[in-house]
Image (cartoon, rainbow, N blue to C red; front, side, top):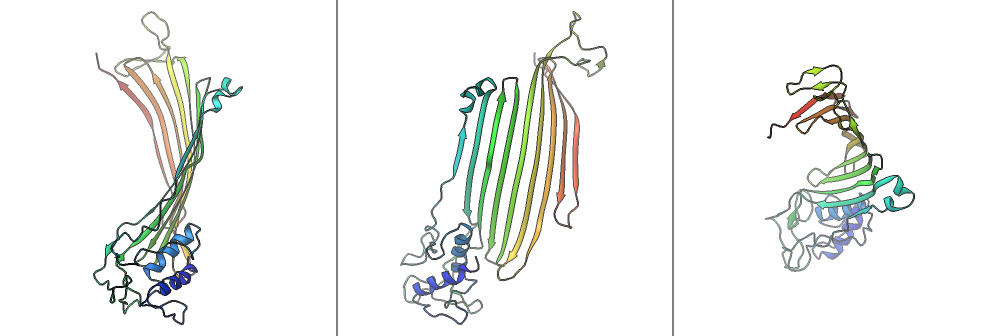
Length: 319
């Protein structure tokens, strides 16, 4: 990213008739290493693996400088792939009733806002900025951009959902994400990397009976659940489990400073088993346990564990 700036400064300096002068530091007049028109294409070229000699420049040339300055950056294709034909392949059709493999990628290039600059000048109407700020020694661009962000994610990079013939379902996802946010005010880059592995599964057991009976007031009666005829009442029970591990870390670095430090980040481990039981068409029980552990990567944050557990009873009063 930093090396690209000298190349972009030369391209811009040779195009702009008001510049054309190369300084002792290798940067052209009005296009220093911190000029907005230099930083944005240098940043995009570096983090999208493009050649800085051919990356599009901001559209401030020509007579119509009030047009979209970012029109040279065309959207790139995102994709989503899903295949569910494996469950029809022999002998897999005797094991699975459904098997879906998934892969998805999407990315965005965004700016919070950009505003026109009242100090912009084009002295000879050549379609280029001509006014140099005496503080920064850079040309005042027509558009001011406070920040620019690149975000891309595989959600999932690889994943599948499987349903077996014995009513067992399993799911798996491996997600990765990267976010790069460049501030054009303090020239600081925040880089966030995230990865997540998640498993989930459930198993439905048909004709299951609880070892106790529950009346409408929630009292437990020992001796096994039974109806008025003495026959044990039966229903379906669904046992579920969700387990995930996520890693998130954010580091900050500043241009032309050889230091990069973590500002936030943590490992999150979550586990959530559940049991759903339909006692009747009016009463449904849910036993749950939910625990989430957060292990920070920086000393300014403390480890934290949240745990919830209990029983939920849903009673329908509809006639």
